[in-house]
Image (cartoon, rainbow, N blue to C red):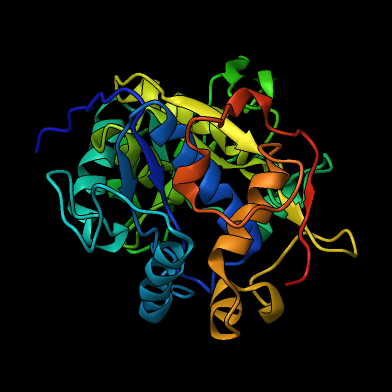
Amino acid sequence: MELRQDVRPACGRLAPSPTGGLHLGHARSFLIAWLASRRDGGTVVMRIEDLDSSRARPEAAAAALVDLKWLGLDWDEGPDVGGPRGPYVQSRRSAIYDEALARLKAADLVYPCTCTRADVERAASAPHAEDEGPTYPGVCAGRSASDALALGDRPFGWRFRVPKRLVEWDDLVLGPRVLDPSRSGGDFLVGRNGRGVSYQLAVTVDDALMGVARVVRGDDLVASTPRQILLYRALGWTPPRFGHVPLAIGPDGRRLAKRDDSIKLATLRERGVDPRRLIGELARSLGLARARVASSPVDWIDAFDLAKLPRQPWTAPRF
């Protein structure tokens, strides 16, 4: 199978994870991503990211499409409308991911790691961010990809060799960024033997093959960006532009969570909330209007400017 990067200027994507209902924070991030593509006449791709089989629910995937259409968002390609770059559901793309992982193995850019998470926690001495976990101490880094054959039935993961150098990118929202992934996480997992690939490799492959030129997402994924840039380069592809949007928080200052039913789009829809009222509030949060104006996403395309987004977290109101 030949994996060839597709290049489509201004192409963006909406990529919900069906592990629960979408909430107001998701609505805001997806609206921004949609406006960024539509403002430049680009294509919008809908992709369902359901690799986490232990948490993904088919009904949540279907609900996400309903929620986003209720808001007035649309897409040109996706699981419900088809398109030439499908499947648009990650759980149906395993053969594509396996080929990408095979390319990394052939170049000896990955190695088999038998360390458990507990092993890594014990070996790591430096403090680490809660979401990122400890920096991998390199216990298995002396192995080559071919050493997997000698492991027999032992479970192992495939770790990507992270070079000891800075990764830079010009973020569409945050401006110039520089991170050292060798010091923040280190060699990272791109797959587990017999259990498929990781989020990092899957989204890199998907965005490249689907022609996504602009990735707009929450700033909780900033740390993933240097890893994905490294994977792009390792696979011989050009990275897209990345833009990271400040997250939405509740009145208590805590990050919005899918477990809070009161801010879920499905709950608001069932309560009869006018989606145009919601879009008006989101537009105001983006600096597009001084007051809430009942409106649709298409009403804000011409006024939208990704570079002028507010840099602080947005406090979501109650509806």
